[in-house]
Length: 295
Image (cartoon, rainbow, N blue to C red; front, side):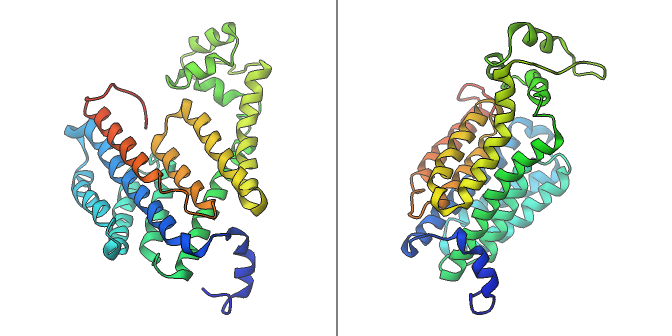
């Protein structure tokens, strides 16, 4: 949609711009390549551990999805590949609903953008960048807002309850006094357990700081003057979260999106980095590398 046909939309979305025109295409090519690498690795990382018990629908999709991720790397066929991936990914989400991971919906939206927009067209380039940037701002702000609204972070109940998660335990042990930590470990996550409360100032600061930081990053990304700071802050925040959460696919997707906020094409390095990382994760699943939680 052009500024002439809808000037009011253009004016309201223009704050998301700021790219050097010559950098848009290489930036979007790198972005899409990373999305495809993440998708193909995720499909196989989920399949390998439960190979003998995979649902028939997943087995049927696995081969074509892999092929589409490879075909999508060719500029001539990228839109067809993304369209097919969108259909297959929607089928996976439908089959797993409501247990599908939150980031699966983000992946579906990115596939739909890849299918619907021509990254060689200047108007579509602008629209693609605006869409991904707005999605990223929304993700950060809403993630913080829902933590605040539901209230289980203001007094630290959610983090206290998360002591039962292996990857969270070492991180939380550094924030919770020994007596409280032992008490939380003694709970069996049954009705009547609790209270999941910790009064340590450091622990409460970390719990409240999580949602505040997410919303602040969203504001920094939305304002052109603070956008670079927002990118750096967002990546640092993600790394801090992933130390405990270990959601590598989600983290890689969001870092990929954050780098699109920079005015120049600064995301090229992410392609080989993600390729190596995804290969390493598959080697973990195959038992070649030591076992670790990453999904």
